[in-house]
Length: 443
Image (tube, rainbow, N blue to C red; front, side, top):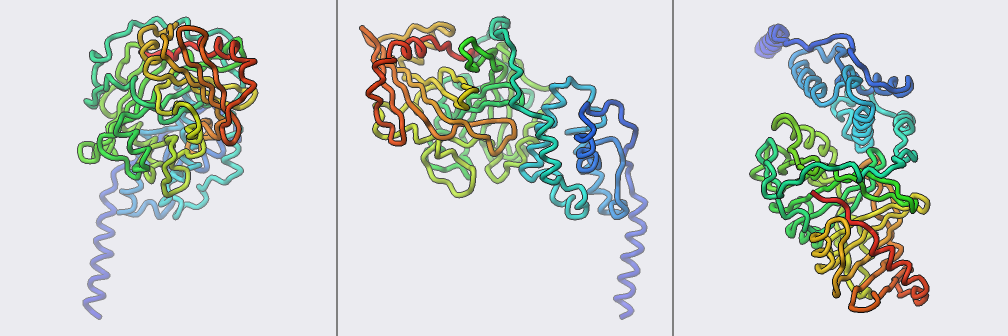
């Protein structure tokens, strides 16, 4: 018993001595808090400010070493990623973008940290509070520019092989524009469209369902454009914004979740960030999807994968076996959204059509043998990102085969994608529409 008592006493003495080693946690008044309604700020103050502000809010048990050391590390790391005490210095759009990320972290269960909630249950964001944040963000308000934006982008292009590597050393793959589409996203939170392309390794993995985890060598390119409201009432891609690259190599990138990360902005493809620490933004944003190998995209595929919301099987029905071609295996030319009917469509092209697009970026002349395919889907909310929509059930597939004479138009629709025999009545109109869709701008 004496030994037990001695050990307990020694442990208490050691614990008391350890209390001396308490590096500080800086605390100061807010300099520029986020600009938001009071009801929104109340949610943030309750659930986020303990870690994501310059205010020092520790419970008594957070003050005890060694728990204090862990708390201090989490707070300093959280402030570096997001600090609501200084967020107001950024433009209003950037503030909202930060809130969108925060909402998605909460929605996916990544924030507040589960281990934090176990000791601080009052910080939990209730469903009603989450709806308060979502209502404030309101991603689908009709606020697109009334004048085309694509007419004002005049940055000088440089050869893709001459683009500077990212600040972490990752090189831009100059072949990314020829990769196959895996999915498409309509981002209402920042009014952008995105093509998510995959290299051969990524496409094969998607087709087999070999994506948990993705194999080494798989690469994604996420190409983003501003949205532009056209005179036809449809929303089209406008100015090119950026391309982001993810390169899977579990060994080489073990310190960044098994992925290499890169982003190049503008037609001159300037590397993003001020130093190599920009990668922390990437890994932090993708952390909630660690169970999906840190990948937000649900690839359109017929492969069956264990787990909910990992792949998008519903949209893959567009590759029905009775179609004359399989357009989802072709290259993507452009996309648009019909806001009245809540549909999204992508224009695909066979090799001859893609070659024509690459030769004439703004007004391609499709040669004989070129085939265009317009796939139209119903939209649904992206389960991985509040404010985004992705393809759901396909509604129709239209083909236009260019020949020496009149182009041949076909339309397939319905649950079994039967050919629409009445399509001949609209063939000329639809042919003009498909041929008149300008390709999305690429660097």
